Image 1 (cartoon, rainbow, N blue to C red):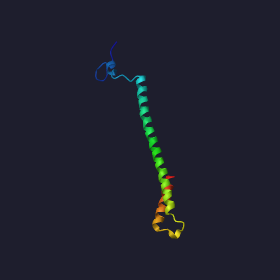
Image 2: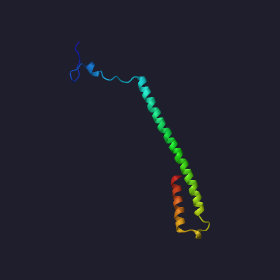
Image 3: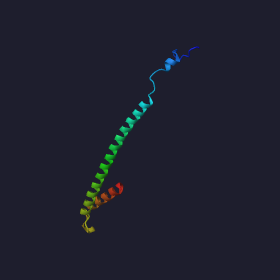
Image 4: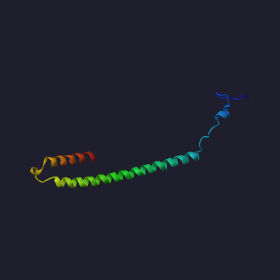
Length: 97
């Protein structure tokens, strides 16, 4: 029986031998490790989202308190600066809700 050679003249069987493909177990272990790393990233992002949501709640509470403080009961007591601040707060709240 004649031997089949690759493009470089080596026997095809020898050319096909190289690094063997990973075993099923190796593939599963690698995927499991990647999953753990991704889950760790997801957990970090969840913590960051929770922190930012808490920060937004605190800012809204403080902003609403200041809004009430500088919003006089009588429009004739308002200054243009107060109007600008009140309008800015209203605009900011609309954009984060």
